[in-house]
Amino acid sequence: MDGALIRKTAAARGREADTYQLILPEQQPVRSRPRHRVHAVRPAFRELGLPAAFVYESLEQAREALRVPEIIGATGIGRSTVHEALETLASWGLARWTVEGWVLGTASLKTCAELLGVIETVMQQQGLYTRQRRIWHAWLENRQPPGRIVLPDETYPYWLFEPPADTGPPCDLDIAWAWPVPR
Image 1: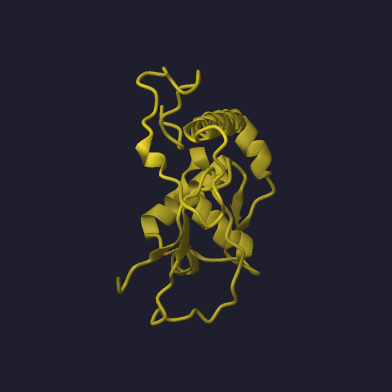
Image 2: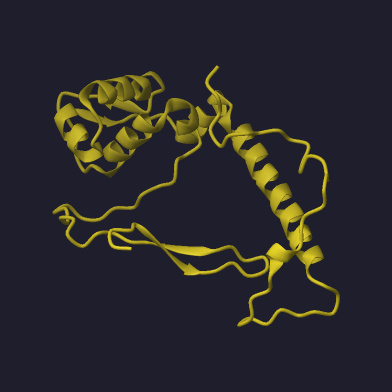
C-alpha cells in the first residue's frame, strides 16, 4: 500500500473502535515557518463557513497585520474566497482592516456563535452522539453470551450475531448531518 495516507493500527474489540494512523509523505517539503496549533472547527464557523475559519486562524496566528496575498499563501484559498471570508469576518467584528493590513477584530467567537444560534446545535449534536453511543454499547454488550469473557488478546466474532430485526429509531432527535443545512 505505497502512498496510503492512513493505516489501520488496531482492530476493533468490544466497545473499542478501530484505530488508524495518519501517514504524512516524507517527500513533502517542510515549511520554513514554525509549527502552530490547529483548532477544530469552532462553533461560529459552522454558520460562517470553513473559508472564514481558515482566514480567521491565519490572522490569529500572525504576529503582524496580513495583506490578502499573505492570507492566500497561508490558507491556500483563492483570492475571491479570501475576500468573501474577510468581508464575513469584518461584518461580525471578527476581523478589521488597518493601514498595515488585516488583523483580528475585537468581537468574541463565543458571542458570535451564540448570536448565530449554533451553541444549541452543537449541544444537540453532542447529546445525539452520546445517546447513539449508549445504544451501540448496549447492543455490543448483548452480543456477548452470558458468562463469556473476551480476553484482551482474543478476537470475538461479533459479526456472527445479527442485530434485532426492527428496534425503531436509535433516538428521538433526527439530525442527519454534522453541519447545519443552509436556510
